[in-house]
Image (cartoon, rainbow, N blue to C red; front, side, top):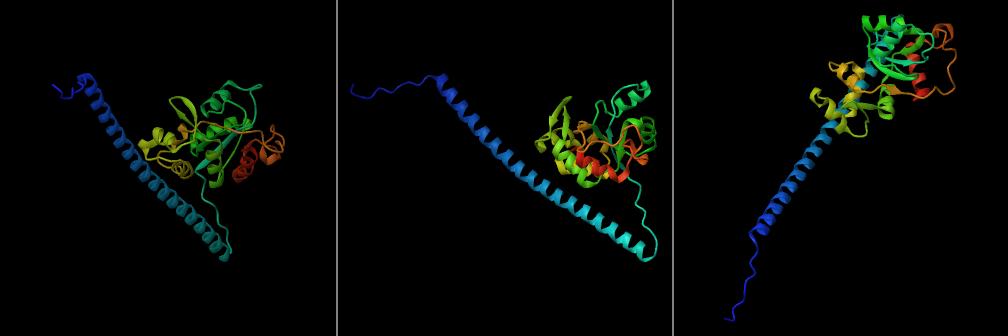
Length: 243
């Protein structure tokens, strides 16, 4: 009679406890797996960045070597034809031909001081000649590409303009092409790689500021002392002023 009375725990409570424990364990395992994956990914990204850096350095050394050799032989070294262009729209919509407007839309240059990367081929050059009075373009170097992507880079994710604050955004959109971080994206753009089209399409057109110190005369061509048209390597100086 004097024995202790055991409290009976309802079955539903026991089931809930068991379920909670199972969930907790699953969550813990998931967190551990994610941690491990992230650590591996960070290592991979670091190694890739190191490899790209070596590649860029090698290219620069090769270029210097070729220039020196040409100079010793009393000749000139002619740079290979550029594969990448950066186009900036410098004029508004006043008195514009409908075809010109359509080409600017195709180039994704819908606003003044918008900028986009473009692959050099016959079709793009023909389009550029048509809209030359409204844009300025040239051949960007690695520094310009890197500064643009890091400072003003936005991606297109689910048709939304998303700031490139994390590598996961790039991986989500371009992971299937082996582009998982910002350095991968820069390398793909800079070298005009096999997935340049997808990488460039992922990048939202750059919204640049009005150039520091202003433009000279945007109605005239660059060779006439104006601003429009092809300015080759001098586009880098303009990017610095507008970034």
